[in-house]
Image (spheres, rainbow, N blue to C red):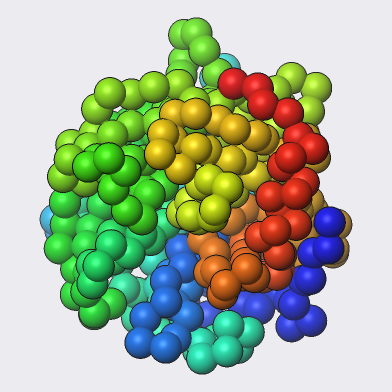
Length: 357
Ligand code: MAN
């Protein structure tokens, strides 16, 4: 399937972003939510900053306390056998390889604006910065759904209490109103459909299960966008495939004549992240019509393979211009890139795929 990666890729790198915190460096500008607003494409970037240090024997973990408006920097010694530092993103307890007790950077959300979708100007200040105790390790991976004149922005809120999904609304990308956690921990990768279906709103989400079950995509419904219920299991990981270890929805579902087109990420062994597609019935999103057998985009270019956490393509948003999909995606937890794909090509590919729940 033809995939046209922009010649300017990566479009935004950490070097393009001025640190917001004194004494910190920007190590990531990636996994952006996407919105069209006043004839511009907005990317709501996840910006990750970490405290600078010249001491290679320590790992620093920034923690922001919103009530006191105070940044705390926790110091871990690499020689401390109670911890494992193999994953560049987090500090793990040595005896609990699935858990983490700190992050190596603090993420917040900052806007980048473009008239042509290729060249972006980045705001000097954050748009959304951690504002409550569910966010003291940072806020990550925003998605944006526009319904009428309201933009619903929801993102991972990370704290020692877990990772949940917080929602805010804005009409002007200057101020926002908080609606709190719409999915309790541990949950990530929520995307809200852009319109009601038979009188109800729908969302995809990804609970992280601990005792039994796998990191799969679920469907929820709501009549007010705040309270979500009637949770149903939608799509499973597929052993032996590119989406064998975990899956999560990426961009807001795109309405096509054939159904709701869902772009989702799948992780395979070795933490390799690819993007694939699924098709849900227009009048009943619990009906999975098709799912791509092969990824539609996988890490191939240097900027997709090498970075802060390599071999990752991860989308939080796309813009559809007629049949052309501008798929914005984070690369290697470092930068932003974009690829154009033809919606009909993806639908064609899905017809050759298989349906598997
Ligand atoms: C998780 C999230 C993403 C990140 C990937 C790869 O799914 O934290 O933000 O891009 O891991 O690190």
